[in-house]
Length: 288
Length: 143
Image 1 (cartoon, chains in turn yellow, orange):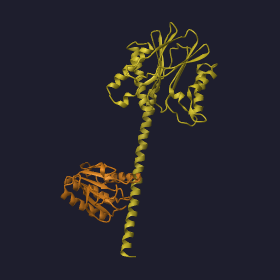
Image 2: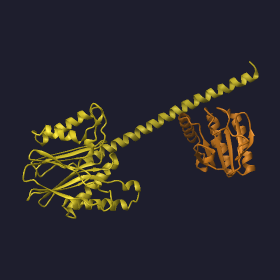
Image 3: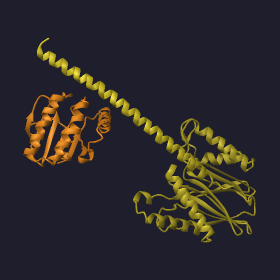
Image 4: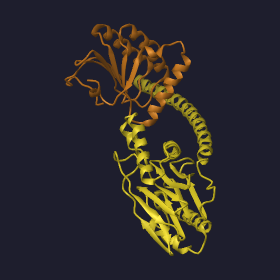
């Protein structure tokens, strides 16, 4: 072997030995990184599981029983999330509704806790029971809160939803919608009431329209978050859409609220199949 | 980064061998080392960086760019020497700002991370905060 060749062999031998050292060092490093990530993931999972217990306390028990039947369903996409159902009483009125906060997961859950407490405060401290006024005050509170934390990203956060106030004396249901619809059934016919476009935390100084529904006749009310209609699935991996929700309600019209809801849960599970849940899902079905 | 040559208007090549070249940046007081091969044996590495030390004194460099984009293997003992002796020595000359250009391969970056972690563990007495290291993609980012 010529001296130059010998030199070349030595060069490549040293290079090979360095590659081996790099490989073993990097493998060890990546193993350590993986262990760290596993531990972090474990800690986060435990923390979220505990947060789920806390958030699940927000689902009302619907007592005292003012309505004939009520069924509330909340299934967050990531254990915790931004959909919630509100239910409370004040004087002769029952205030209930469903809110869908921006995003899901931890930020959604934080917004939902904030929204829930704001609504409680508006009803029980400020004694505002009219839905439109309540939504307006809720919107003001969101804007006020985020104006102190002037971050453009945060300013886009808010909620869509419907708030209803049922007057037990007059049997009139007052309701106001912020970006979500309210459906009701009277005389065997489902009516879909399209919402105002304004969201809570959206356009500054938004106003909301109040509607009334005479519930001296048997009435069913249905409100839901967009996670229900936006769920992907079925044979062609499409959205569930509101038309299927309505078809479902009509199909199981003879069942009571509990029966209809259980069927709806089953239908949406079947629709979802092996797909992931697209968004937080919540709905509230009430028979007045 | 493309192979540096004397025609580049913003650099002046001051020294080179088969494995590495050392250049002066004409735009700012910064030295540049560029790997010319996929691997640099430790003796050649030390020779080049001893030269870079001499030039730092002459040219009053306060920052140093090491372009490793041509490398596909590094020699960990060379890196130990580079971090624990050469860089510490250069801090005394007022050079504490280092820029690095790494090869694009993700595995190389992971190996560099592993190597630095190893060095920090092995030499707890060394003050790694005495110099700052920034990773860049091209010379123009620092000019």
